[in-house]
Amino acid sequence: MDTTDLHEKLLVELELSILKHVWPKLHQRYKKSHRNTTFLDVSEYIQGDPACTRMDIPEDLRLVLRDLQSSKELLI
Image (tube, rainbow, N blue to C red):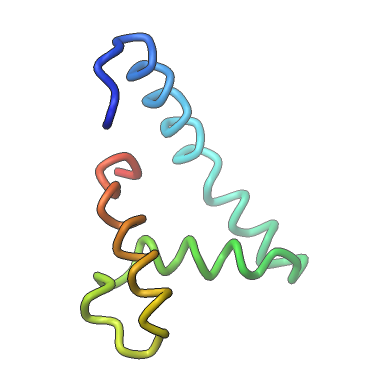
């Protein structure tokens, strides 16, 4: 986390806790409606294999993915 403010840390922890709790239902809803598939793809990329090992995606996407995965501790 890039903040030293206790209030901000607690707020981020609360947000992540809520997202972790509702993710199965959100995932099911997005998958069912076949809308927002980009959101699902990006979510699966972030939670998937490390960007440096992904050769099936373009270099520019690997760089963005690496940055997103580097803050993975926020998603756990």
